[in-house]
Length: 199
Image 1 (cartoon, rainbow, N blue to C red):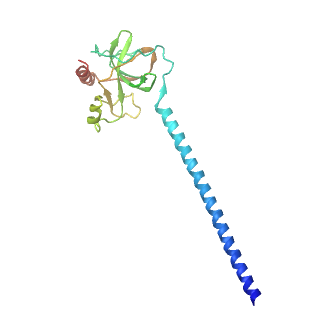
Image 2 (image 1 turned 180 degrees about the horizontal axis):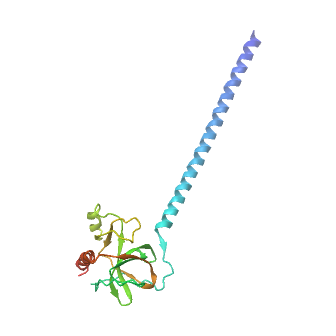
Image 3 (image 1 turned 90 degrees about the horizontal axis):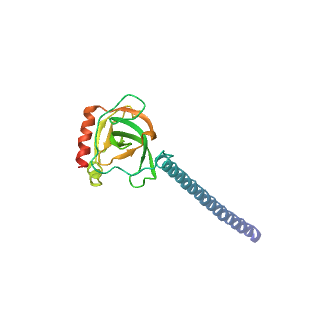
């Protein structure tokens, strides 16, 4: 009788030890999987961030001339689009535009040409982002935008806006492609705002 009771106790103790061991193994396996999953997610987010940065930020390409800085003062605005291979005021072209805070970095974007400064073209950066929604915030930051409508410079024909408080210099030899001619009436509206912000 005592031997049977002893066997039962031993069996019960064995099962308890087995259950405890199994639970510990399961906990360690779950923790390892969680750490592995967290590591994969962190790595994926880092890669995505790197890709995004690479898409939106570019070092200055091999331009034919060093960028001398944005134009300041009152520009001599003209509307003189001429059919041909050379870019002229009144046209929208694609070119590398340096960031305002760091001229060694920038990106390709459409630019509305408004005049000349020596052998440099003067242009206004365009964007398809609707700044009517954050107009007050942009104004406080010193950025002012004017609607220019849509055109061939945007493949999706999205409405664009021109930034009228910043005038960039464009080397004609660095223009990537022609995006079309802006309507003269619309051009004159933009020119009025440029003169207002550059007295």
